[in-house]
Amino acid sequence: MTYQGIDGHTTTVPFERDHTQRAEAVVLDAFEHFYALAEQSIIRPALYIDHSGVRAETRRCAASFPAVVLTASPLGCHSELFHAAGRALPEVPKSLKNPDPTRSGKRESILQVATDASKRRGRAGVGISAVDAAGRVYVDYLPDVESINLGECLAIEMAVRRHTGQLEILTDSLHVATYLQSNDPDVPRWLISSHAGRVRALREKLQRTGSTVRWVRGHDGHPLNEAAHRAAIAVRRNNEFDVSPTVASDMYRRIGGDAVQLVAA
Image (tube, rainbow, N blue to C red; front, side, top):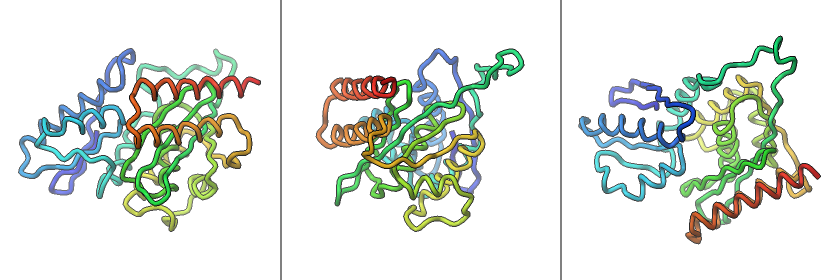
């Protein structure tokens, strides 16, 4: 967890649990810690929770947490805080030891993950997805995001957060693939400046892990790209039309299963 005080000082506090426990437990530990600080503060701080499930649940009962403003998307200094938090994250969970290549005799394989974003024309709100070669599907809905290119970047960020190790990430956004694979210090015109720090942190994370972002032509038959496209559209529509979580989960599971079959074919 990373936060900035009213004096401008940035603090990062690590939280961890046994690897057998769900990630939500760690996020709630961090939330409890921050809320205790907020109750003692003279201001009402804005808080963005970068876990879609916990974020949605806490926002639904926001009245129970009057000491903080629970935001739907990162605002203002949150982008720079993402940068600081990204630098503080360990490359590999402490519970996992790096294999000795002299003993294993082979290098860890590179996992292929496809990402995509879906936006309805003329309306804010972007659905993002990441589908890996094992058929795991990760999705999120960002109601306040208005840029499809930013959505594509955040889909890649989600893929990096959900996986450890080296990745080959496939995207059908040439703008995003080119920027993330470059060392260009300038912020591209298509990237909203408020998120520049967050995207720069993503680029640094990709470089540290040796992961690559590769452009693939959209709607050209690549099974993982097609699966990511379906999942991004699905999560956007499911949120716009208030589809039940059970029905939505079944939908994402089928998309992942179809992707595995097509990759193996």
